[in-house]
Length: 226
Image (cartoon, rainbow, N blue to C red; front, top):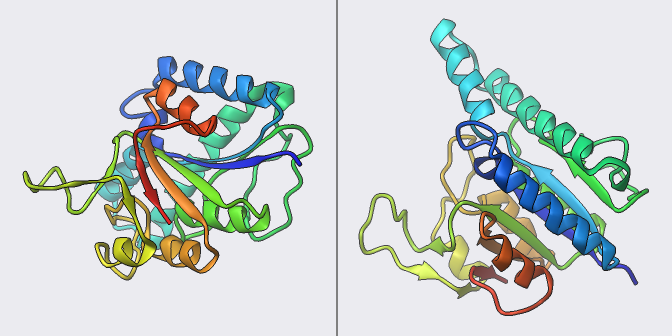
C-alpha cells in the first residue's frame, strides 16, 4: 500500500521576508526524490510574510474586520499552494485543495492545498486531511527545531520537548484558537489529532537532511506529540 504523507508547510519557511529560493529548491528536490520511492504527499502551505504584509497594509489604510483579514491570509496560503503546484509540474494534481472536508483524490503523486475559511488554521486543515487519508502522522514544518514548554522568545528557561502526550501538550497551550495565536500546533487541531490518534511531528523544515531522516523513519531532531 502506498504511503501518503501529510505536511503542513509553514509560511515562515516559504517567505520569511522574501521568497526563500534556496529552501524551496531543496524542499522540492527532497519531495521529488521521495515520490520516486513510491510515496505520495498532501502539502498544506502557510501564508508567510505575504499574508502579514497585506493584512498590515489593510489595517493601516482603514478599519477591517477580523474575518476579512483572515480571508486575506487564506488567499496568501492558496497563492503559495498554486506556486508549489507549478513547481512540481506533472507530479502534482491540477487543482489545489480549497475545502479539506471534501473528498480528495491524489491523481498524480502530490496534492497542494491552502487555507479553508476564517476561523480555521492550516494545522486544522492538515489534521482533517490526515483523517481522510487514514494517515497516522502529520509533519508540521516551521523554522524551529522543537516545540517548547513555553515561548523561548520570552522565557530564557524554556525547555525543549522531544516526546509528549496530547494530554500534556494541550495543557501547555490555550483551549481556543485565534488567527494571532502563537502556538506550535493549534488547540482545535490538537484536539482532533488526539481524538483520531494522529501523531504530529514538529521539526525545522530548513534542515533538509533532518527532514529526510524523518521521512525515511530514521532518528531525527524534533518534537513528537502523540
